[in-house]
Length: 111
Length: 165
Image (cartoon, rainbow over all chains, first blue to last red; front, top):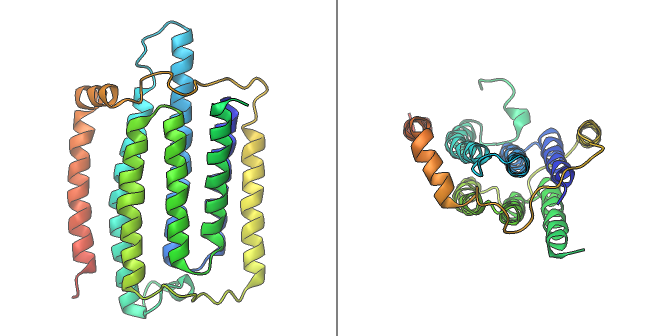
């Protein structure tokens, strides 16, 4: 597949995530849209690693070029998992304080 | 159209459709389920690019662990009903137009005249577990161990934040 199809796919998914963050008011759905954006960027990184690999093989370089990008995606997933656990704990704490997860009620940083 | 192209367009259509459903459904549980479908489609893209390790990790970590965590929190808060009175139509339209504009600008900025082909099914073995594992434990041992400390601190932080006074 040509590389620009993957670029367009990742751009469309990222923009859907941005539109979701801007339009929805439920804090959990906003969080899910952020996960969607992270995933689109991961897809783009893997596509670029394959592009890098194809170029390196065509130029006669070592056939392990591009492994680093996929490890980078792996570390992004690790950090995303840690981030989700802390973020959901924060949302649960906010729900316990104001009994709502609508972000219009969360704009004062205190209650 | 060969098999790769058919699979690519099918997975792209599924991913974009369910991503749109994520941000348009009123019920948060449906949003979570559609997001799981999106993650499976993205894993299909990884398999299509022969990045098998990332495909499996994506399914296990995202669709398996993170989404279950989201569902747990939704059920815990009793939010599994349609509870979002979207009063401000103006805000909704401006958000949608802003997202669409961002998409247009990014697609136009990243356009290339001579698109390069990346490899299709089964070509290139950099995504296999053997190569990734060798690189991970040979060159990236320190970041790997640091990520375990990150997980420990995230776990302690989540417990402390979630604890009642």
